[in-house]
Image 1: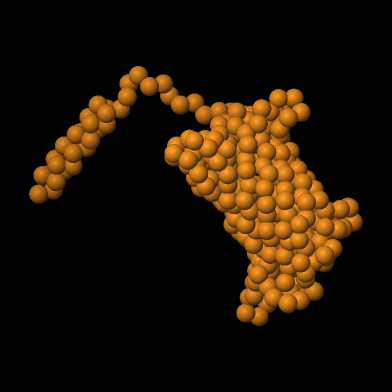
Image 2 (image 1 turned 90 degrees about the vertical axis):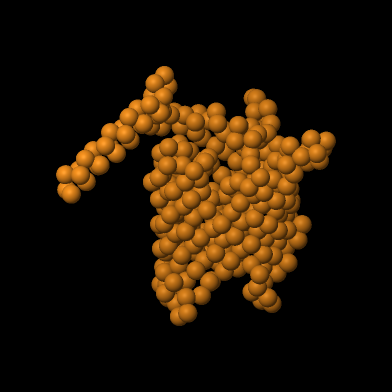
Length: 288
């Protein structure tokens, strides 16, 4: 019986090996991965021009650390974000109305979750739906590679004295260039306040421009720096460092170790006028 089983196993192994050799292409050249840190600016424009209906927007992560309140509680921060292309370019309306192809709805939600306080409450959550038009521009000279213009609402869903809400019109250009074999991106966000219910002085802390810089590679580490505020002493600074730990799913998405540092004002909408202590958090991101 054992001899028969061995014979069957050997026969199956020979058949599988023969089938694999027959099915394997013989003329295809081996795939050679790009060298670490290779500049990857060229795919960005293609991504914007051929974007799918549902795609990445702002970073999506879950991180924890801090101890940034009087009770020294451990506070986690997580963010969900996506954008949706409303009109399919291949549909009748998309073909007839060219401008409609570039209309997007986006949604971003950022929460602070106190893990060590009694009942582990959510300290605050900011909800940011927006509607904008995105254009892939010429990118020649001083002109941006792409830009967005639209309307954004931000609120924390609270009532009475804890209620915070703001409506803005915004314009966000994007520039990319190469520096040291890596991608350097610059994307300031210009904001015009339409309504500041419950927080009339929020523009003194958030300012009218959000400065964003990104430097790195999709296959290696990436640094993102964000500063917003009407002045340095009333603004907020956020630094993000990420590194991939799995194969990418698509542009900007995959699995990343995510380290975030924040100091200043405006970490949450509820506490826009409260200066947070320097906070360091570590966790995981699926979009950076």
